[in-house]
Image (cartoon, rainbow, N blue to C red):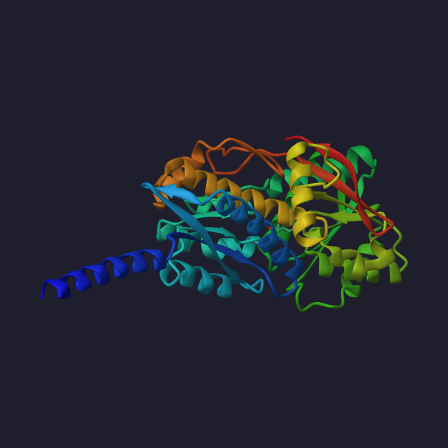
Length: 381
Ligand code: PHE
């Protein structure tokens, strides 16, 4: 009997040791909601890559301590395909089924506008890396972003065209079914007119993913004789528009906003986008140590240079994980409060939040030269 008890006891000790070794490391799940397929697919790919670098950095130092337990970060990535309904579905799935504690995303403003009310109502913090439409963070006190907003971005380009390029007549061509495009067109036009310039044509189309022929609108625009063409859309449509503009012998300078930031812009647009200018969040030529550290890390990991999307998603994830670390909690309200007091320097500049949970950041203006993005200037708010 005694022998039996000893064997049983030894067995018990082994079982306990075995079970605790096998115990899954505790983890914090964080969502990443990006357009990995669809007309803005390079945005999604870059964003996921950027976010992963921040996740790896926290995991390499052993994770984040929550009530004495080091928790590893487990990212859950999902694709919006650029569609608001799909964005809403994956958002609900991440919160209800995957148990994510916070979400980085979305990228396209129309998708962020679809998921923000869901996050807010479920008490989950959402940090958009790249959605610039002002309405996004107004959906509630759990909704943040790490990028500047379109009233600023539109103003920056209007002033650049009017003051630096010395043009007084501009035309705009935009997708009126997309919150980002519509908003940015509006903010550019307002500021350009306020400065004393004239918007000689403002033309629209619906659904840049499906539209391939912009010649009717371009013909009208050409007849109005603008000196500059502002295209506040995403890269695929804008590259196509530029090709068709050049085919119609419109040789005027053109440009747009952050939606132009993709390697596909020059792949699709070729010579037609040469010389074009656009506002953006990030230039890899910025000598600041935060930027150069990130550029080096990204190159080592992926063998290519980061774009604004990668850098913004890195910053969004980094700020979020720092907020969790600082508060020592994964409760939505605690993460929110911790973010409110955040103040750090990221790969895309200083990040601290105003009362609408937007950061105050500079923009850069880039120009396409020999098929590459060249840094022109920085504009402070
Ligand atoms: N600002 C865009 C939007 O709100 C997304 C974007 C950000 C695209 C940065 C390119 C670079 O829809």
